[in-house]
Image 1 (cartoon, rainbow, N blue to C red):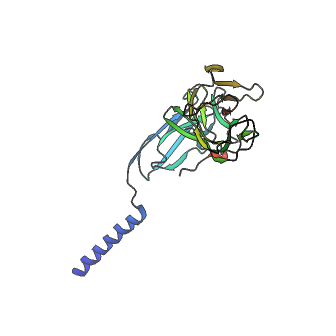
Image 2: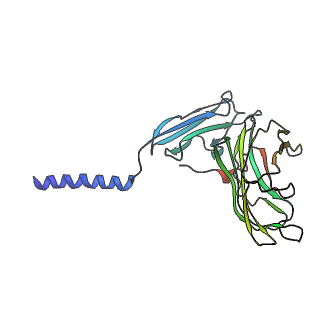
Amino acid sequence: MKNFTKKIFGILFAIVTMSFIFTGCETIENHKITVTSSSFSIGTVSGFGTYKTGYEVTLTATPKTEQNKFLAWVKDGYIVSKENPYIFTANKETEGKYTAIFDSEYMNLMQLSSASVTLPGLPIDDGTMENVISNITDISFQIGTSSDTLVSLAYKQNSEPTPPLFFTNEFTILPYVINFDSDYYITYSMTIEYTDTLSGTKTTKKFPTQIKFNLNSLGSSQNNNLTVTKDETTGNYIVTRKNLTADSSWTVTEETSPTFVLTFSTLSFESTEESINNET
């Protein structure tokens, strides 16, 4: 009897041990999955609900006509899958809101296609400037639908100060998807190190700037230093922010102030393969 009890105990111990090995220390939580459609008049969705950690989630998009074919799933502004149904595992990273995009002539979605920053003037000493640029770091772009909930679009840690300073296509651009009719916040940020050519003293200035824009509002009426224009040839929308100010009272002239430019183009599902994340 004792041997039988020991065997039972041993089996139970082994089961508990193996269970611990396979599940690790992951805490079982509830994860809310919200699902919506780019337009319920052309397509419906299913799969929303609350799922335990590790459970399988299946999202299904159903177009109402052949013309309104399903195109992609978008989460937090990014295209995450073109599969339908879309199956993934519920966890902290995959919880959130998913939008099914259906083809439609009225689809008002755009994507970021390029980001650039220009610093005109004289970044190296030619004898005409007392303060020259010796280093540029932490150039970043962020975007979001509220001023305090932003996601990273592009980032460049360091750049050599060679004139003229113009950074574009050197960033890893994420094709963030936006609704043409909505308001968005963009935060631009960069750190510039200036060197006094007379004393050799170095001064570091940050340029943190946040703007609010809507592609429906063209021109400079949104802000004295902000313009939203449309390129009639390409159909792209260009958001430009000029004359940024530093985080102190130190004077930055129009000739030396950074200019940030973001270009948004019509959402193209053929050019976003690399942006798709497999969340399964």
